[in-house]
Amino acid sequence: MKEEGGNSIKEIVASAVSQIRVAILKSQERAVKAVNQEQLALYFGIGRFISVNTRNRNWGKGIIEGISQQLRQELPGLRGFGLRHLKNMRSFYEAWSELETNSAIAIADSGTNSAIAIAELTEKIDIEEDVIRQLQLANYPDFPLVEFLSISFTHHIRIIENVKDVEERLFYIRYCHNYKPTTDDLSQIIKRQDLFHHQGALPNNFMQTIPDYKQAFRSIQMFKDEYLLDFINVEELGMRDEEVDERVIENSIVHNVKNFIMAFGKGFSFIGNQVHYDKLGHDHWIDLLFFNRDLRRLVVFELKSGDFKVGYLAQLSSYLRILNDDDRREGENPPVGIILCKNMDKEYVNYIMQDFRQPMGVATYKTADEMEPEILKLLPPKEELLKLMGE
Image 1 (cartoon, one colour):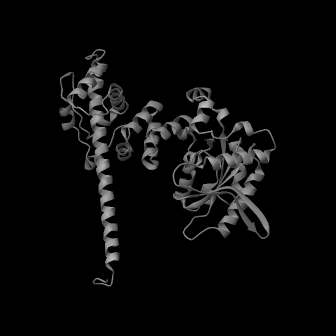
Image 2: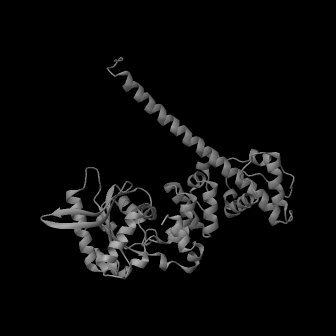
Image 3: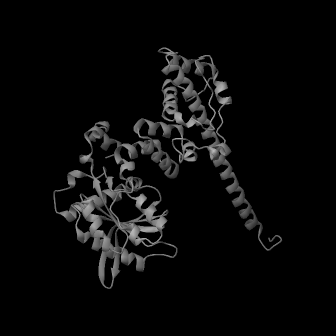
């Protein structure tokens, strides 16, 4: 059956549903965003209230616990206001107390009056979007407030617990906003991967080989100079020749491809391992092939179990040339390649890489046996890990 205009009822309904669905999802996204902002504002205000009274010793020991207990008695079903959570609110405020200095964020002036009601705090909290756009902090004129307000309170606490430096905290706030890691993943990224200190530090020739400056910069920021591949079975390494070791590493990555992708960040899709290309009668086998949606390009990872060698760049360059000529699709950018090896001299790699015309970088990796002793202490025993993994 056709309606006016020649479209069928089914087509009209499908089009209308598509538009309404988009509107609903956008509305839901705005609602979640508003709720999160309101919650952060509330916790910031309560944190200030607790901080002023405890740090000035207006409250003695046991007061915060008493407040938690009475709140839950007077508001049955209330969640998120236990003793630990209230202390986290204080930590949240104290970590970012400069947010209220000369800013448009109005937080209740608790003074020393311990009888102030929680309701009075919420009435005076104002973090509207038009206010956010006008906010300029004296110490941090480029403070990412939109990103700050977009991530959950729990994510904020994980960052505060694990990071002391302000610039590093801001880095992870932006990371959470952009990549949406779980709180458990975030702790791993901070503690074990140390993303802040390794992001964008790998030797590369992206600026010389990628014409678009923004794309080149984005590629630099996408990759680190060192990765923790703690899922590799190190007991199988070093028992045979180098080629076998590389295959062990490759198989470990393939079997743990989700963890591998998480180590590299957002937008990676796994295409395959030992991907075969025949070029003019010559066989080429790519260790690991991915596609990155953000870069819109294929990404090759070549695995090496030993130290960096110049010949690795020539091998990787040939793979990238073949991919560019034979497997690059319409709308895609030219492929990039990363060599993952055990050790390298960064200065030397950067020097040698200058004359290569394909976009490449070199990174190193660590296995579980090379982790810092302090981090190893935090992990459960190997037997327990294997049990959890079902092995």
